[in-house]
Image 1 (cartoon, rainbow, N blue to C red):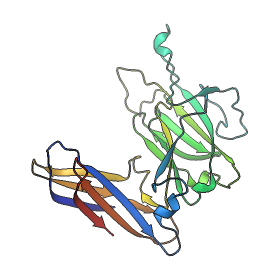
Image 2: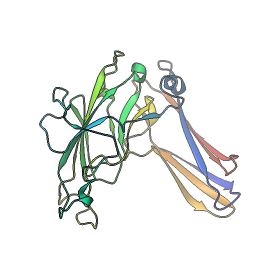
Image 3: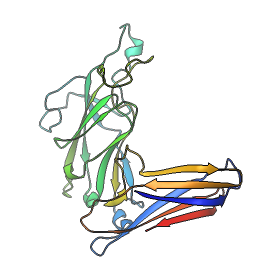
Image 4: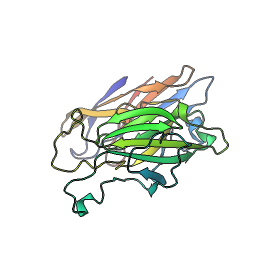
Length: 266
């Protein structure tokens, strides 16, 4: 955990937005810098790709739905966000469907992602989600209203031959007496009802799986009309096999983009 505090900078206006930029650079004699290794997939050390399109959906349970040999050609084609309860408010049934649904799609990935840490980032899945990649179970998440992320680096095929990766997600919104909310005034619609992303980082990166946060936490312990204090916290992870020297720099700018305070940790 890295933490530093930027104090005693003047605020031009009490309500002016405070923008915080935090960057990490890693240097090692055995590995390229973070900026260099990121150029293959984007200008930033962390990039993300939308996975909302091209899913197959099955509105029931299915044995071995997580392996490629199980056919899904007859499954419904859907794009995310999606819920299997979308039509329930418009029919005459007194209730709505609660149970299991399966989602699958393929991921043709470039070998430009080699050397990266790769994560699946779900903005929301109601209410229990089990995630599989290439037949391997990678994570479970309980709770329909919070994001979650799974590290899938070891499960992906990045052989430079255009190999497709199979992503399968089982979502279950069945009644569960041990999983809140237990009683609500609205329907607990099931499905992948928010966006899904593939996130790629360098081997040295801010933590992604910490409650699916950006890995950087900014707070303002004290703010007045004249001055303010910003506290920046975050966890830097080194998933490489070599030691790395890391510099974390935080910059606070005012509404006009002028730098009013900076902090640096090595």
